[in-house]
Image (cartoon, rainbow, N blue to C red; front, side, top):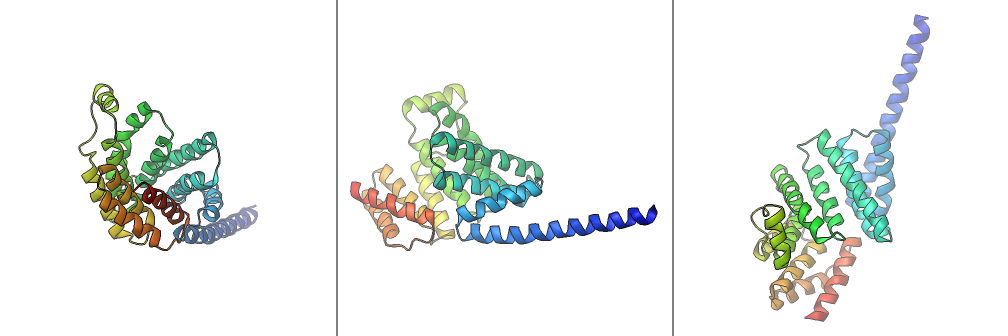
Amino acid sequence: MKKRLFTLLLIAVSITKIIAQDNDDTYAKALKYKTEYKYKEAFPLFQVLVKSDSNNVNYLQNASYCYSKYGYYHVTGETQKIKFYQSAEYLAKKAIKVNEKSADAHYVYAMALGRINENASSKQKIANAKLIKSQVDRAIELNPKLAGAYHILGRWHRTIANFSAIEKAMINSFFGGVPPGGSFDDAVKSFMVAVSLEPKFLMHQYELAQTYYDMGKKAEAKVWAKKVTEGAANNEDDLKAKKESELLLGKL
């Protein structure tokens, strides 16, 4: 009996090692795709990894990131997109529970909320404003070189700066105001940091151009929009940035 139990134990250990090795190989492959901005290829691999171990913070935060990216670029229909963004939100929140000190977990949570806000009502956008700011601030506190966090921070400042008088009144009346900031100047500063950290990522540059345009600084907007159109597109984000910059130049 003891011999049989020992044999079963050895088999269990062997299976565990095989699964762990398979996960390591899959994770390395998925991470490579993500680093190369190949969200379509990375997404299903991270799905598999999360199913195999739903308490691994790396699997969770990367899966959340891919749900946001894949949902944005490869899912049609606003209802379906929202489902992907909500899955991204769920996974990010779980990642934070597993490791509150993971900068990426807070970053992808802010990203998911930002995606949800793109098609949300004014009331929901306002309700999420404080949460997005708190999450992105925490991400930057934990990792001051996280370019994506500064990108979201820049969009946050610009969004608040663009709120209408009615929306700002709602913020003060129902949500007790918003955290300090929310200006175009703060948005420019944030995007500048993102550009300095990831100078080849064209979306940072496009958002900077858009911010200058919203400020009425057309000369600066034109300079940055041209930089994007002249830059090399290496991924889906870059292609979108180039398209949006061409449209912006048309306005200018």
